[in-house]
Image 1: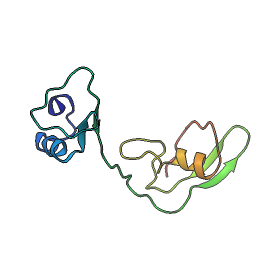
Image 2: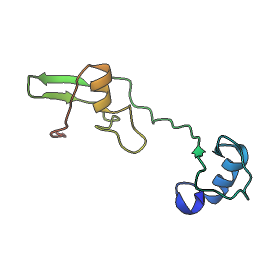
Image 3: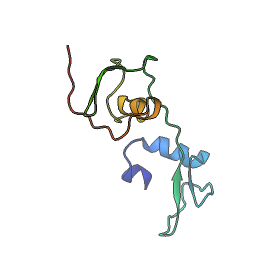
Image 4: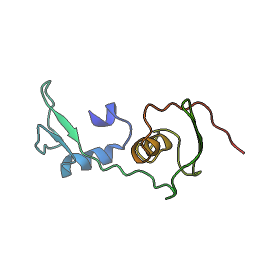
Length: 110
């Protein structure tokens, strides 16, 4: 079922994940011949690590009641995407620098 429904990994990966308990059913390790039932709860445990970014924080260039202008490190994405969830400009401004209810308006490059 996993290899046909979820294309992120190979059939060999899913077989190994089931055998090692990374994918389990109803909190139990099952074998490859297990037949799923409608009430089964399937869990796939994975460890996700974000790609690191440069250690420097964004620099606030201008701020007033309507907007802020920010100079961000080049390795830092603006918003959550792909492998980035917390290492983003939006999350750093919110969680580390205290800004709330942010919306990206425009991006200026050199």
